[in-house]
Length: 195
Length: 99
Length: 93
Image (cartoon, rainbow over all chains, first blue to last red; front, side, top):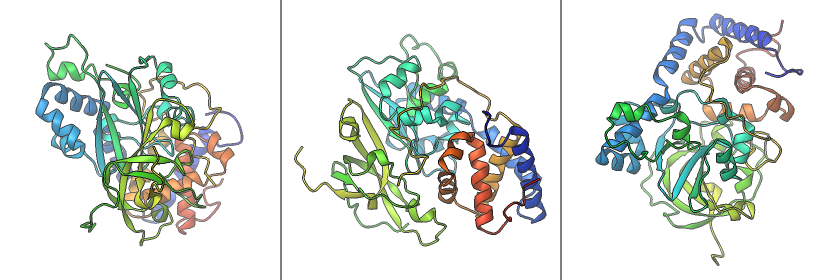
């Protein structure tokens, strides 16, 4: 938080508490339901889920084909679909094509598969620039793509959410699914890093 | 969702996004208004966000399409593509398909 | 006219702070706001599109000065006021 005339952290914390109390008095919420909702959110949402999807796709060609054809169904197979969005589309990076995800209008994001989003994903800097100059933005993340690689930016403007299937790194032929999943970062699942 | 009718814009259809500037919530960003693109595929139907955002229970359900735009059509330069998910009423068939 | 949230292609926001922050929340109240949003939406008090509309309707200066979850809280309060659940000023000291 910066200085200025908007609320300080202590002020807003007090206002949030007051709203919670008011809504409890009106019978709209209970503190327990709120706790449960937060616990469920934190327990179920993690980039480890997206990483497991990727590792399965890297080790199982039939799963990879299903994932690219119908991401919603393939992710549901592993128990990772939730009700907060309608459809999941998985976009595959190749030697000649790179994908990167954004939501320029707000910050839509597949929470269940990626966990709570990083601050940069929600920033005006990222949202304004990646649709205009993705190569420069990716370079700022340390990912320099050759000019021969086409880039597609997916701007999540409706209720489809996107997940990037990164390229499997060379020299990982001997690794199992768990070891592969450990290599997959959150940024790689958004498209701002390679694995 | 009773969508038995065929989609208005099959994959590959050249479309143009509407130009008007609504005084309410919409999910067509300004950078993509009045622009030409190509339908990738239908994404499935959903309530029109513009009306649903007004708390109306009667928002129409429309097909949503993934539409691919070339950077130079959006920005006048660039070699990348941008894909947006757009409600059917945001789109019309491109009237002069001269490309 | 386009709203302040519609930033795609807008100049001037500068370099991206690419820090890979893994903490989901930076204060306890942020978690409570997420809980409030999920609970109220699940009960049909408002829908996601109304919520987005309420965030976008913030005056541009306030929107840009507010943190992410501050925007959420502002939008929740605005919707609850509009729907008559709370009174304006009811959260003030």
